[in-house]
Image (cartoon, rainbow over all chains, first blue to last red; front, side, top):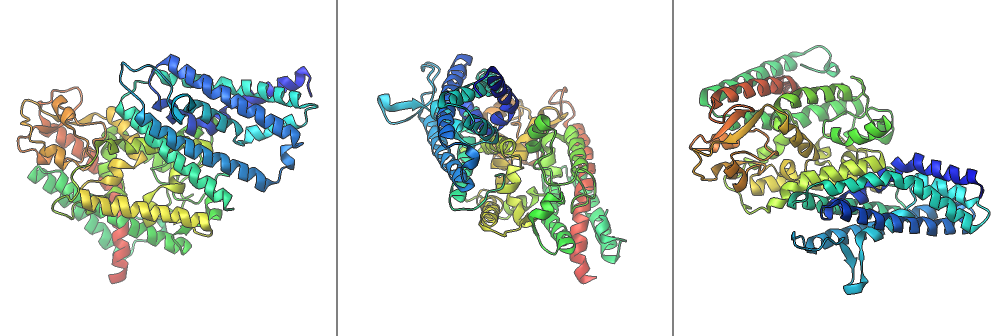
Length: 220
Length: 356
């Protein structure tokens, strides 16, 4: 499993399922990127924070997947519950993010900082980092496929390495999103992004709650 | 004029056809005679909005016995296609060559007798010529709220935060992204207010009940209550994702509405009359409408100085606006007759079946 072939497989799996990952993360990534101020550098920082914490989520998940043997052995109910909790957390963060964008200083003289959420002062964290982590642990189909393979790894380190390589493959597909930094920002773009975030948050909230109370939602 | 569901035309259908033709001809005649566009177009549009559900529900009831579509019917691809999910289908189709709508590509696949291909072709033909004029001359949903908006003599709510105009773009962005993520037309599944008066998801479980509850609430708020309070087409102006998508094609259409700044006083009567808030102080100063203009003609009719004018791109604003109006109306009305006329006739025939 720990052979070069296995990591080649992880890379190919990541590259092949990248579009599915982008589609899955799109509702979180695109509006939050558009809600940030313009600038390629700022958007690169956003993506760096997003992808770094997404990797963290992947590695945490890899460790858990390996520890539990295989994801497939997880009862489907439990898997759905994890999914629901992640959705509820995403909804909360997106709502907070949309609020924080409204509070952020948008004057042209203001420093180019990522929108932060959380408490005051040092306790504030970039919203991108939180969203990255949550999308990293959400159980999208390609992720589950990688989880099944990682569970077969001989050691937890090999499982985490497998996920790290898989992450690299998927991340290639996220790089073009930095291009949204070139989109000119005005009140319209920011407002549309914030409103979209609220709508998507409401969807996640509904989907999460309904899954928790045992009702299937279309699409899952 | 009638779909095959009716078979050979009967007396009610023949009468409905005659009445529809007379109605459309009289309205066009009055538009030409009075030089007023909005007033007469509104009659057509409200009739279209009110009669579409009548004909459609009748057809659905005859074919299926219920307005609710069960999931098996959806899986079998028998969902009637509507134009609103068109923008939601583009990304999944481009990335996976899959149409994420549970309907047939071919005609006769859906309950309406018109598959996605025919609906998309009609949409494209109309859009190329009239741009967002679709929303005032072809959309079979907007008429109900336009009718509601015309009921009160004065608006009870006059101060509306202009940022609500971005609502359709936000719904479009959210729904396009969710449709790609979920691989389903998210707007149809969760947010379409017109499910309340067309075809809803068969409520067999809690989720179905919640979905239908959302449809009814949105319909009651956006199509009934808010137009009555604001005298605006609130669903179109603040919510409809297709409207936002259609706004893009206002940039490619040859027809638009301009403000002749040399004549403008500015009294802002045009701004007040616009049902979708497509005119602002800044846009009037620039001599143009916003890209969300639906070319309904309300501002042109409201302007006492004839400063709001129909216009053909590439020409001077002052260059024969009456000719631009005629050219636009010939195109728009021809399409209104072809597309909306058949829907009006079908709805009318459904009602006339009861009496004749």
